Every structure is written in structure tokens, then in C-alpha cells.
Image (cartoon, rainbow, N blue to C red; front, side, top):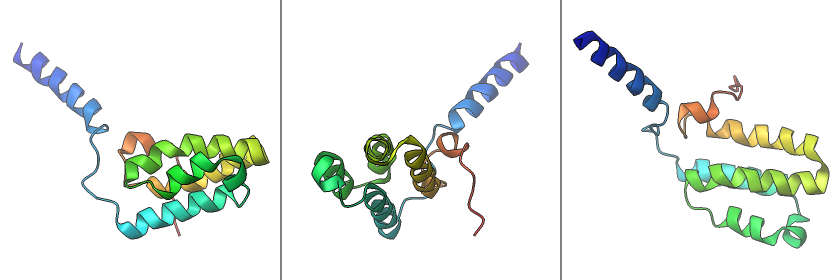
Length: 114
């Protein structure tokens, strides 16, 4: 019976391991790069059409804020430039989060080798 409990705990632990945030904290430089990339993707017209999204990106303070803003940024880009462009921009932005958010959130994005 003991092996069943250990096996079950091992499986639960493996599932939860992907939910635990990595120990590596995002540096201020990394946050600035992500902010700059998001604002560049939104473009100049975002200030007129999506001022709230632009303000939220401008004043985001941690990696989690930026991670959850990706959907708003994609929706804004899609309405301005189309869904295909929005998906491409979001993929570029999302790869910047590799190693900064839990692995299970970024495992579907290709890793940059440059």
C-alpha cells in the first residue's frame, strides 16, 4: 500500500511542479524590454483607440501583470491590424517570458536560439 501512496504523491507533485513559479525573478531591464515590445506592437494609434490598454502596459509593475496583459494587447492589435498580425506579434512577445513564468505556460512557444 505504501507504494501506491508514494506513486500518487509523486504524480501530484509532478503536476504541481509546473505551476510553481521559477525562482528566477525578472530584472528591471527585462520588464522594460517586454513593456517596450508591447508598446511597439500596439503602435502609435493605440493611444487614440486603446488608451486603457496602453496605460495598463505603461504602468505594469511585474512579470505577472505583463503576462496577463498579453490578451488585451492581442485583442487591440487584432482590431487594428488583423488577427494574423496579432498572433505573430503575440508569439514574439510571449517568447520573452520563457524562464520568467511557470514552464507549463510557455512550453508551447518555440525557444529562441539566437
